[in-house]
Length: 199
Image (cartoon, rainbow, N blue to C red; front, side):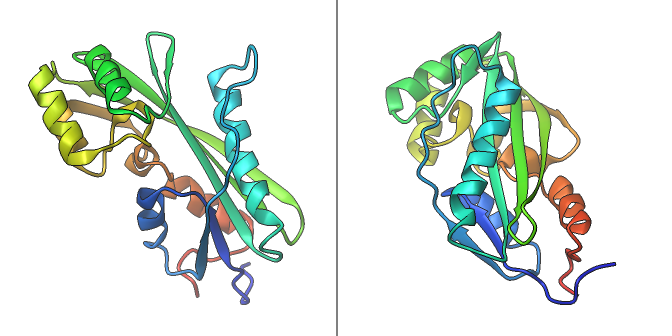
């Protein structure tokens, strides 16, 4: 049974792509830009890291929005046991994409929903595999000039021109690759007593 009083949904993220995805749900929402240290902990495995950072982002926003449901997300890509984080610079993005050329990258996206009404936390990790085309330096530089994906894990934006770099996707929910797994979020909202259709 859902609560007729729909709580505010807060996305703790500075990602425009995640904001656009959240707008698909007809629920009252707000956005909070968290400022957290995303440095991996010593000996921390990838799943633990993305789950920890997603939770940290959600808890960072929670104190500012009492009574809200707060969403935190984090994502990294893995290439041959190497973590592909946000490149931040053009040079790092070129290096990442050269290494990704012709290879499969596994993206891990963590999502958590923190209910400030009762301090309940739900979390999950979605996995998505992306197979990249053989990429020339010219294609890489053209892509980066158009997209400027310097704040995206692996220098890749699936929701934009990143489609020109890949030839296959494998996963359960393509929105996880964009950064906010909506199918899993809908499940979490229903468990929290909220109708995702806003009724």
